[in-house]
Length: 471
Ligand code: GLV
Ligand code: MN
Ligand code: MN
Image 1 (cartoon, rainbow, N blue to C red):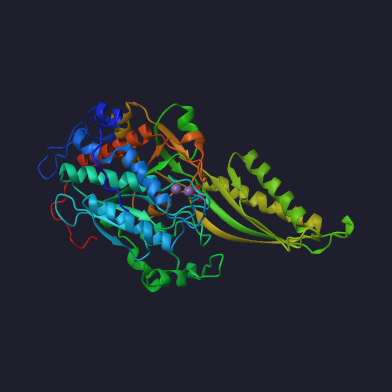
Image 2: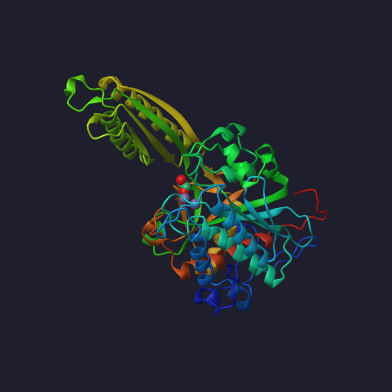
């Protein structure tokens, strides 16, 4: 059942927020009045408009989406190109249309919506995040960003503000990489960086990505149609829970992302020799004992270097109580603010794996499954988010945060400038059912996101000859 956003009393954050003052660093002291430029309002929208999208209505929609899952007992797992993906796309499309957008599903299964600007065919400011999840997920990672984006478009549509750009919302179908082991498939398609070799990736049941597209009703030969031309875009903004503890520690509801950490992921196989558990130690080639030493080495190496490493998946073969493990397969996810630092540590780790395996008579193989460089957010778009936070949360100097989590913006950055708004989450917990956000923080985030869009509008010249070919 859909849940139309119904008017509700304005939250304190909505009712009390100050008119938006654009900081000098943003480059505009007031809405432009030059002929040929749109004098977009940069003050808060009226309460009857902002109240259409209360925090409680957004949180109710998060609850509604959480029901689309392949796991029992209220646990959430929703992955790319499945019936659950189809269902949440349909629900998001309904909400996009209620917010005044025209909607379509792109060639990669991303759900898109568009509100035209002052004249049809203008380049678009894209607001987005993802609707897929990890296994046993929370209900806000990605989802809250999509709903915040729809809420902002709803407000701007309801206020009848003619913007100097179109507004689009994209609900990406795959950010987490849960099903096919490769992250950002939806946003890579939008950025035009989808590698056709990925069509041969398989899920845990041996279904290829190629076949999954076909079953979903998409043509894997036409994925390129999802790609957006840089000139059709003015930028990409994403609101997301922080997935870290720093806003909570600083007692602030909202922050700005400086950089999204670069990530590399590997599938590592350690090969030994399976055998009877009665075999003496000096005759064994125990792949699990070797993998265990490797995993603790990875942790200590990463700690010493000041970056983040996670081994989150491990399989033991033959996995029997009285058989020495003959083979172990595990994952490694390595993240850092600087790609050179991350790559240097990876080289150290591979040298240490070689030494550990040699000492134990084991062999190993490594396959890289993901490589995303660190992405710095655009100063222009960061300035708009900063202006939004300052006007909404009264924070004169919003906190800048490194995102250690990956985001769709990492892929979108290949085709347009990006920036991100972070929302405090309880205990920094994410990728877990305990993920939690407070309604006043969601209210402040929606207001700040709206004002970021309006401040960008105030700073954007209206093109004299909109090109209807741009989309
Ligand atoms: C996505 O949430 C990631 O950072 O892996
Ligand atoms: Mn995630
Ligand atoms: Mn996410």
